[in-house]
Image (cartoon, rainbow, N blue to C red; front, side, top):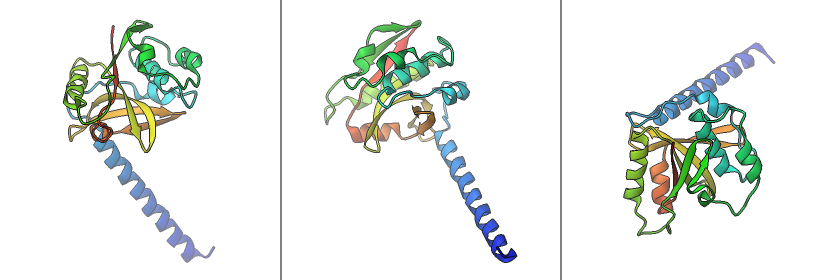
Length: 192
């Protein structure tokens, strides 16, 4: 490759790298919680966690909460291994169930629609965050269902959440908007 072409190619790669860096910075800023309603956590725990099976998102989220609360070791996957690819599972499987010192509760298991109490749902999430407890939430993003863990609020007042897709950590900063579009959803909270 002639020198001039190499220089142009290097400039193009540099511009792409700068644009990628700016995009990541904007994304991280949008996902950076602003208030005391944020739970600080060891991101390394989440990065090491994996969703083992395509349909094990509920037990995967439960395991992340257990790990973040230091109830189980980082290599704990017992819940997902039992669940595997259970197609019939829901938050109801964990309702009032104690797992390694945390008792989980399903909330807002209601029909989605115009009469869904979205404001009450958000008030419940706000209360849990103020008590420094994560909230598990069912979301339909990009036409597929996932279970996210809400850990705080963004600068614009929305919720910041994460989930796993295999080994990949996915972040979401438009939880309220997604819930409004879905016209409601259920959540899972817990207590010690």
